[in-house]
Image (cartoon, rainbow, N blue to C red; front, side, top):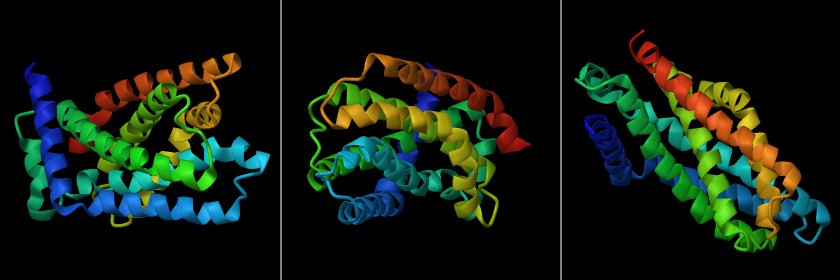
Length: 226
């Protein structure tokens, strides 16, 4: 229970800090909506090809918009040596890491849920038809993006070009999760159930989340202190 309270405290602190300034969430939301708008002029929503690439297009937008939020996860602690104070605080690094993951997860998921209705309007897809399954894929895919983005945000926080390095490190590692989420989302945003053959992708996405969450928790002390 003490560990969970520490995680909740860190997450609440980050959410309050972000909601006070709204720097990351405004940038992410504006970026996502702008890309969706621009792509809607590039692709004809009536074409069959558009329905085939809809899931991939949606997750490309989510992935790029999400890094704008994740980049601020540890960077907001740099002024006044707040990061050093957090590391020196009497809480385990895993609690600090999970708290920041949870805060970023909520922010990224909020951007995605706002973007979905816009996506449905611009691309004329019936994304509400399979919403429970779609929401599950959003949760799993967003956690994969968050866990990888947060660990690399901690790793690159002291690098001057961290805005460039974060996506360069994140996307190659995230590729299996993104491929799974894209494949599963394509059917769901068109109002169709997940095909039986695609449940292997769901298992891959769940496995990715479990494995990289465990690896990140094991390495976070080294990343923060070492």
